[in-house]
Image (tube, one colour):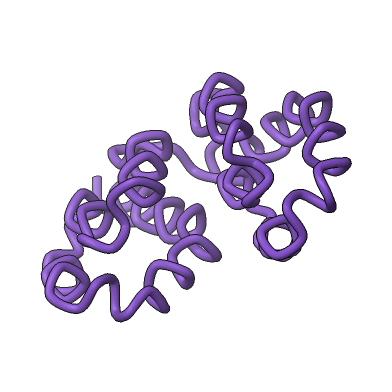
Length: 136
């Protein structure tokens, strides 16, 4: 794996933290289980959400060491997923054209595909970036 401090950014983490009572910043930093818990409990009844304000720098460092950077930018993909996920634009950005079009026609596979992508987006991007690096 390649280390690059630009895979995730604190700015994006804090922007998603605004919606963090729904778990978005936790999903962004590769914490899908707690992201789901935050989603269903409104950020652990807003207490966990407030605490996360101070935990974002450490979550950012951990994500930067864990995920591979490359051609596909994590921040762009997460913005597209968060705001346009049901249209599949984030999948088209990753050059997954067929599933992107299917998401467009089915509302993100009836929102289940969007939920799957929230759980797996970082790994999807990291894998695509590794494939790109190994092909050159």
